[in-house]
Length: 69
Image (cartoon, rainbow, N blue to C red; front, side):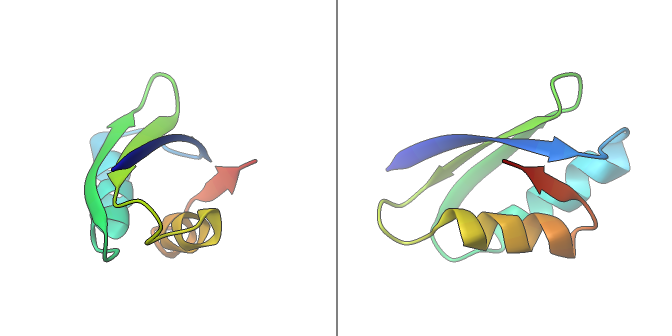
């Protein structure tokens, strides 16, 4: 199990929070995604070797937000 903290631009409300969490949790291998609206971050716990940063970037974009690098 690995964990990464992602910086996401544009989240401002609980709807944003839920959209990003749901999109990330739909990825095969993601065990948990927790958004911190105040910090504009998402803590993602996932299975080692199953996902890349590009996978997370795509899921965040599909939710309508931008992953900052």
